[in-house]
Length: 231
Image (tube, rainbow, N blue to C red; front, side):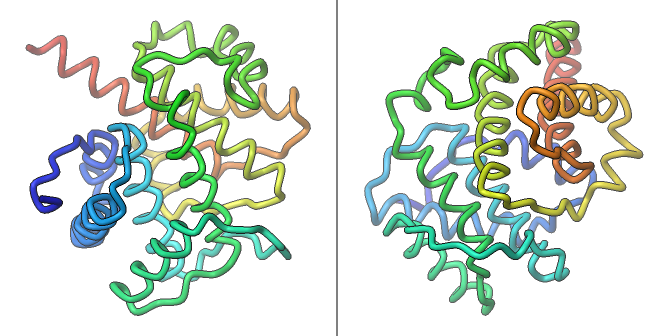
């Protein structure tokens, strides 16, 4: 049953190792997500699973700390399952999810149902809305660290989702940005280059909050590589 779901949460473990997100929030969101996936019979990849949990947990923390996403007027039509998932979050955490946070969550839900692309172990960047821009940026900056397929896939999805959100003029805050800048220095510096390059290509302002989210993915790759070298 859903209590036995054991998909990995590698990125969340990297975040938790820096004591950024409360383990209690992560575990409560994971349990809620497991039940939701089971009841709705949703097919979901490992990356989509961990991404949904992590971004939901960060959103909850962001709302609790009153560091909300930019308040933009929206007439967005949300996916039915987004509405149902948000309702479960609101009940579990006794909170109200702002509409503009729901827009961000809805983007993640939409990727889950684009199964033809997002369940692949490898991706063709041409399949993504901003794949051309992301490919050019990776060629200029990411390839210098010899990324594995997991980083290329995960960061591609993350950046594509970010750019789609910025196109809607929705900007989010990162409650952990100061800690990331201090403790993930190499990943953060590379993320600055990636963010500036994408900003030049798209004319979207990619600020420090967005850059520190990029750094989490790169730091996860560094830690994964270190672990493999030790084995």
